[in-house]
Image 1 (tube, rainbow, N blue to C red):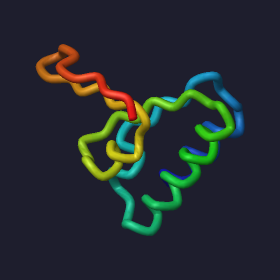
Image 2: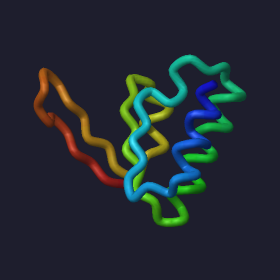
Image 3: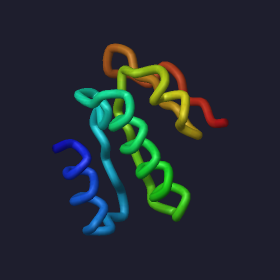
Image 4: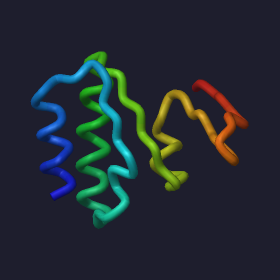
Length: 78
């Protein structure tokens, strides 16, 4: 269902894709598929914001903004 939700969101070609824990309830293979799809649309120029607690998912991002207690405590770009 989560992969279908991502696909449905991408069909509308939004200017901004917000993904809240997009791999949270997925097995590792499905999670890899979803992340590959997100990487692909990002490489085509779409802005993507991923909210996650998973350090492996966060490590894929070219920019990380870390929040603590509702405040930005780190903002790094790779």
